[in-house]
Image (cartoon, rainbow, N blue to C red; front, top):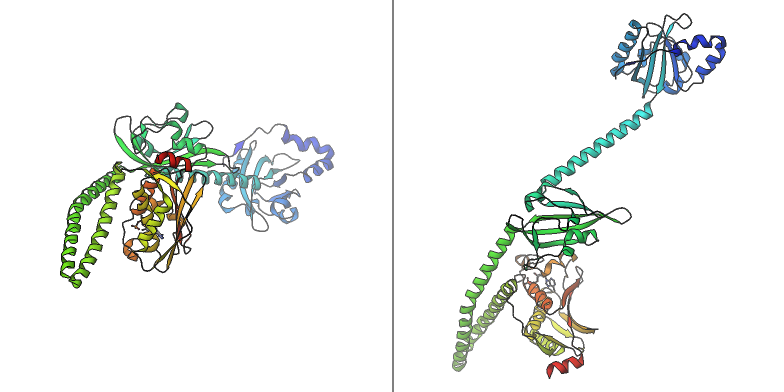
Length: 513
Ligand code: ADP
């Protein structure tokens, strides 16, 4: 700490002025909050005012005769001695310094002192030190410094995390729409700067839905997050200003203050172009492979039919038994290939629906009977079915039902029943399939409807399947303006529901006319 010099001015003469009233002067010093210490030219303490006890814990009497440097912190000792010596050679100087002194209890206090050499003053004949305890002040400064350092370290950490992240991150102020934070990755991903939201558009490129329709301003995830909406895993096609294109996976969320008010919106996005390309190639392969498999399977089915007839004529029961098993395997394979073909039809938007008006309760009954014929382990219990008509592709809705029932049986090997219900609620009719198997944990409820998603790999449980049945079912139901969902808790079984717009009696008659 640098020592500073000040003009001595009138204060040096104060003892003289007060000489007339020595008693008053002493009272003033002894009641002062600051400490007055007098030292001789060797630094020995000649006098210490009573408030020294507050700083050092010693009474003035305990200190008289002690060399001042004894209570100074070892690290500050040299500096305090130098200050003192300087004062001796420059008698007119007044020096200020800050150093640590040891309290009687062993703790350290920080004091600020002003030294004045009055050795030549016959009335005083001492070096006068005015000490002021600044420990607490110092502690506050220290705590503040630590806080600033901590904040700075956290900010550096955050900046570094943001810089290293593979995702682009953008935070916008909810009230102004201004971008208050974004990382370098954003620029690398969109090949341009991010713009304030109120500029009408916050990137210079154009964003599209995966079906190619442009994203409208109100659909921007950042704007929606500012209004409190959370966007999860939204996939978008982005065409940059320079014409290059890529696919992004986007997540957005509002940021709220402690009162729950939205103060900002955070968007993060990453490049999924490579994954999309691989998906596309996978889809092309699936389409090709399933088409290639379809023809020989059809021939196999035909030959099996002819062979069955032939063996029946010959009454070869043994061969017929094996042929029947072969036929059932061919049917299984055909269903699989058909599912794969459906997936590629759905992907390319080439799925055709032949919609007609029909009685859903009759279809439910029919499908349940068919599926019941394929299982000996489970009873399919149908609760009384209300009459309901819908306008839909009968085969496709039947396919959904077959899939839900087959899953209910397949994934509840230790149960022996599956319950089917149907209910009409306002303009919608809902069909529910309940099983009593192990159920499905909530974290899978959304993804279960994605292509090729399986809760646990089939190899683990030996359940045949590719994870496409629910994807196809969901797409079919969506195509009919309906909804497919599930309710399940692990260990409590699972209930899959689908609801579809129901036709009113009058409309059924009109449509059938
Ligand atoms: P998969 O051909 O694998 O059955 P799905 O798309 O029909 O394909 O089902 C996806 C996954 O959902 C299944 O692999 C299975 O893990 C889970 N699942 C479907 N239905 C049920 C159910 N009723 N109970 C438990 N898990 C189920």
